[in-house]
Image (cartoon, rainbow, N blue to C red):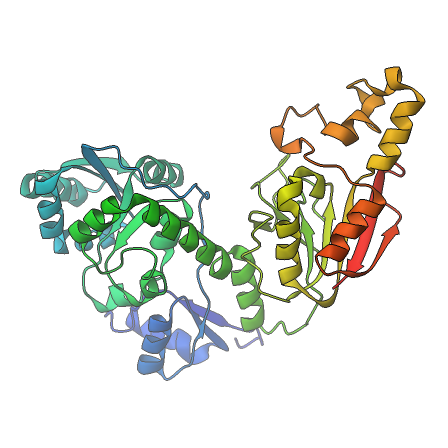
Length: 420
């Protein structure tokens, strides 16, 4: 600070009244140029105890995205709890809820945490007091995701305390992102999801309601995943951090949709797969559902060798979703195989150009996709000529549609550009 270094202090827990940590927390607040917090409740605490205003920056979601599913393998209901041992007081506080549920059905509770002696003692007490089967799993990132994937639901009981009130939604976010039903006690950070997952309903009531409507539960889970993607993606949280750190440069927002392993500088690289050939996109989401991006916020969409992998009956809705995020005046650039060029080449020498090796790149690969990767996602589902692709872009509302030189291979490929 004395050397002129900008000091940013981020608070995630309320230790302002702690006898050992409190003085340090107050001292940091006094010297900070910028104060941040992960929840509104934490920001309120900082204001009340230090007089400083904090910028709220949401936590980014972690872990793999799973398919939203609620199909318990009864007669035993598999419940998982994961987290720091300091949060186990929530199980103590709600042991009666677990006992009540265990009287209705067989319950297996898996606890994923650091296996301290007091944790083992808790597990024995819970099993004895409720009749539920209790299993302990040593904490690791991999063990957590595996336990969540194998469970029917995630339970997040929270003991009433000032500490619990300011906590972030990270355990709920990770569980929903993994596709699992979450039953959580009500704290401020969970309230934005209370219309989609059981928050504050109680364990037994929440389980029984969701068992009575599994299809509705899965539908709500899918919508909750969309909300996580919009509000808690690393991309969105990164933008919040940039603003908090004083980055006010309004650079154009350009998307490279379906980037694969071609990570382009100057673009937000987006793909539905978390990594290809060790290349990781900036944003992982379905290309027909760009939930991380708000309406009319994108200056340019670039999509190279993607459009041909959608079925013809779905491509119009896909393009309408891309149009949603594009600003008025923004450009959409699509590059894909040129069906007209491929047909002409094929007819020149059908014997040669019907091969599956490199001789078929200009023809058979255009018709059906690249066979070398043995990947069904690389199969072509429709073909376009310059005229048919231009007509499709005009149909969804683009103007000044024109063909330009392809970035990859002319004449096998073509590039068509339009403006919103």
